[in-house]
Image (cartoon, rainbow, N blue to C red; front, side, top):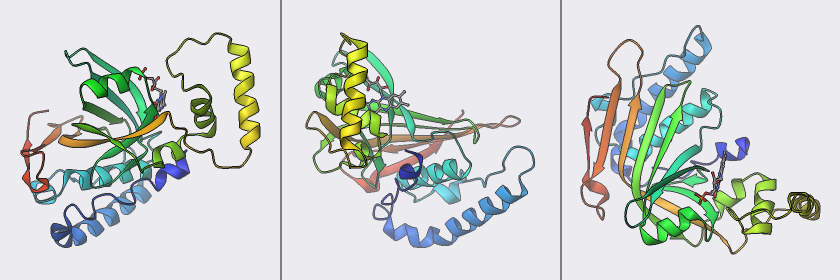
Length: 252
Ligand SMILES: Cc1cc2nc3c(=O)[nH]c(=O)nc-3n(C[C@H](O)[C@H](O)[C@H](O)COP(=O)(O)O)c2cc1C
């Protein structure tokens, strides 16, 4: 999954804020140059450019910053940077959380795929809100995103990026969360189906659906061991207006 995931953010952030991108293009280049220099010096913990300056953040769409941080997480060799804890809740507010893979992202939001009828899907249907949290230990960074969840009909990227046994398993069962009656025959069936597909692409089954989380709030935190950790919260004031993002620096 790793190599595939490296292509994941190809679309992100290019349109949402194209006007201000021009102003930031040079800064971005400086930042990636600085990153490269730091990674070749590599003595002790990696040093990273301070992306959390008001100058760097002002006018940027938070998903552009998300993209930059995700790229850095890959460059730094974070293990599995694209796994995120996904929290959903029932209509009366009973929460639940699980790990899922971020399958794609663009200026609209974060995409993941899952199986119909599961707890998270039931909860999303009755309460279309979710929150995700990433933690990258090498970089000492966390990103929290809250938003509205919508179904996506034409995005199979998340399914394509799952490892093959996972894809085949999801096709077979459609039974995520249901009891396994007979472990051995379930495992045997999986191996048979894997062999059937061989090197062929596994098509997304009808019972797997892609969802997008459209952010209404995005928080970035850079933990610091010896000084005040940096934390910024971006909030979308009007859910219908991409221009209504505001941001605040807050105590960590
Ligand atoms: C590393 C990892 C990645 C996972 N990725 C996904 C995923 O992308 N989609 C998914 O539906 N389940 C994924 N799972 C399984 C979920 O954590 C969870 O068991 C499943 O979605 C059922 O959750 P639910 O019963 O709360 O709906 C993953 C599990 C792990 C450990």
